[in-house]
Length: 165
Image: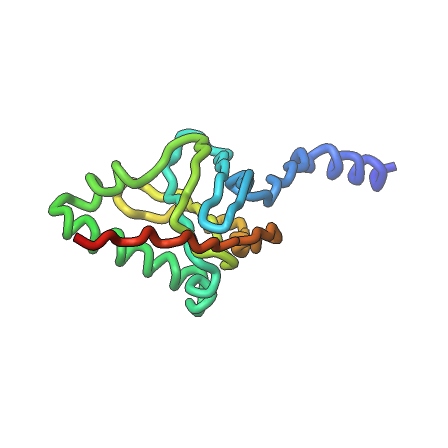
């Protein structure tokens, strides 16, 4: 009887199980339309209040870095250089650069038939990265060859006679 009581009391003293937090992405990224030179996309962060950096880079360049952390460090060097060029503080530069909330946008000037990565990560206005990098890959289309044909006809017109004076 004391063993049953001990087991019941041990079970009764157990803390409530904690539900695990889903390990889902911090951003929902949707590629809406891709052409040979542009992409239309939507980014919806789960945290609508925290600023984030949103960029597009060709996949070959992204993959040339040894790690995602090395790529983020390169982003930070670029951001610091741009703030210096603009002659503003890092915080002022990031206030203009970072996004808060959902965004639907279009980026053009992309190269045809090229793989790209749309990526985002949360960052403070002081430049502290506070989330993992989320990414979505896409590929621009190639130039489409037109199969239309046409015919050109050249007809020579007679030259008017020149009159003599």
